[in-house]
Length: 199
Image (cartoon, rainbow, N blue to C red; front, side):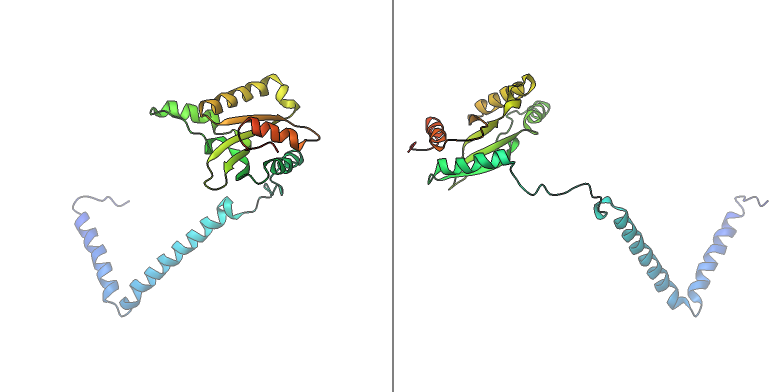
C-alpha cells in the first residue's frame, strides 16, 4: 500500500504535468484535441436524442381521442333554434365558454384572488352571446336539464347565478326540451333586452 505524504504531492503533480506535456509534443498532438472534441460533441448529441425518445410527449399512449363534435345533440338542437331566434341581429353565439375567460376576480390580496379564481376556473357557460362587431359580452345562456333539480347541482347553479349577477352579466336559464318554439325563445330574448324585437 502506497501512502501519499505531503512530500510526494509535488512529485505526483510533476508526473501529471509531464504526461500532458508529452501528449502535446508528440507527432499525433495535432489530432489529439480535435478527436477529443468530436467525441464529446457526439456523446452530447446521443445523450440529447436518448432523452427526447424517453420523453412521454413523443410516445403515443392511446389515452386521448377527439370528441368529433363540440356540442351534444341536446345542445346542438337548442343552438339551431337560438340562431333562428336571433335572426339578423348583430349577435354572435359562442358555445362552451370558460367562465374565467369572461369574468375575473377583483382583489389586490393574492390569496383572496386565488380563492375567488378557484370558484370559477372549472365552470363553463353553455352559450355566450356577444356583439358581432366588437365581441362585447351581451349575455349568457345556460341549458338546465333534469339534473339541475338535484340539491347539489342547484347549489352550484346558485353560486354561478350570484357570480354572474356580481359581474353584471345577464344569465338566462332555459329548460331543455324535446321541442323548442322559436317565438317563445324570441320573447325570452326580447324580455331580456337581447334582441330589438320579438317579431
